[in-house]
Image (cartoon, rainbow, N blue to C red; front, top):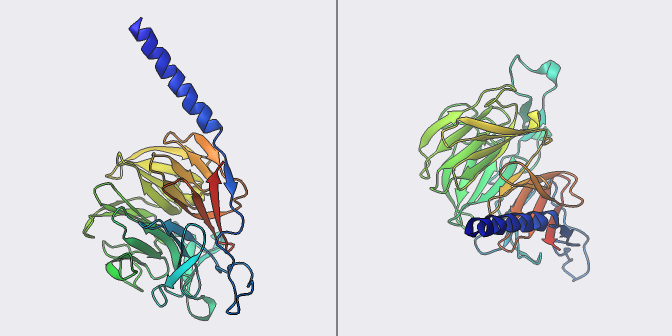
Length: 323
């Protein structure tokens, strides 16, 4: 009888959780951030983020927006009030462009960079993350470099060599994202130019790498984003192959979620669910919830209270709250 009651309790708990997931919906917060105003105090129209590839939540609960323009890091409070800007001169002026299939070398990348007049200000800005210690990480794709800064924006560590493209232990070729294991190990998706994931210690010492160009298990066409679960599994968007691949901490292929579409952003929630663009999944790949009206997500962040922020290359940042 005790076993029957226990089994019934587990069943009811599972059904309740599934019903809660099915009912999980989100509502768009209109006019976030708070619209800018002129020096005279009059409305100045919506924010112009040029292109907004990433968004992140600081240890203080403020919201950082990374955009491809002057003052590339813009900080707001959760209500959308402007607090400060920083980062001028930190991000390179190159621009990632697609290479036509007819112009690619055999087995070569589908992406390259353009610099100079055809580039644009701070267009190397690609990803923005905050680690559990509150440090802020910036990925400069066309600068081939990743910066770790303190909460004030001062650079305290650098991965890669600025302006030097390569596939060595200390060089990248148009990297795309950075993620962290629970022990502080660092993972980098070296994605536009190189088809690999690179792993470092928390101090930045090279440990290992994996991946090659292709469509098979453990191969990539474009490793665009990555996140690490508390159990150590590494989730990588293989955007051009329209899938998400899962690896162990040593780079061993475990499984994949196929037909996810060309996902351009990942975010692991504190309850170990994964935002894949505007779609929330459990760690088996099952869809738990979807955001309304998200045409093209390139960056995702979730606050402690569960608010979801989406950055888009159309130059807007959206905030969603649970209903």
